[in-house]
Image (cartoon, rainbow, N blue to C red; front, side, top):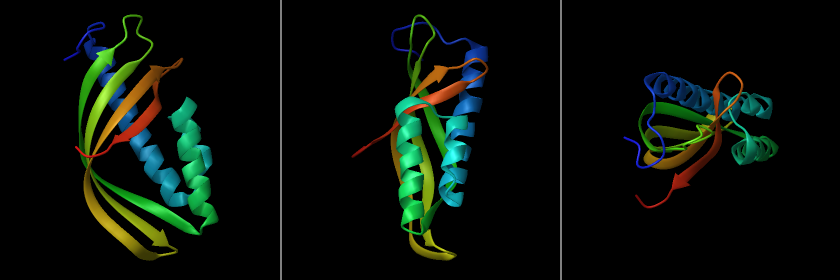
Length: 136
């Protein structure tokens, strides 16, 4: 359902779902391999800057993060009338592991809520904002 804005066409739903899932795979790979160069494939703007900085910071500390994705429930909150952005609410089931080399130094299973804002590019949707929603 789309509260306000325009109706979301079936092809758009499929494209957004595909590209949002790919963005999560890319983020997980970038954080695990400490490769900030991967981020710009699926992220733009503030999200790209935020995650590239996170990768650089953990690499400086000699750490890396592994996300084990156990699924997402994603709802459309708003699709702009001109089709230039779509806002999503995501409830993600994740296992997060922080590693120092091959040694896991912290691990937790979380249900995390996110607000995501995606924007279309020439050939795909990219994540412009991915913000954790605390306390839900």
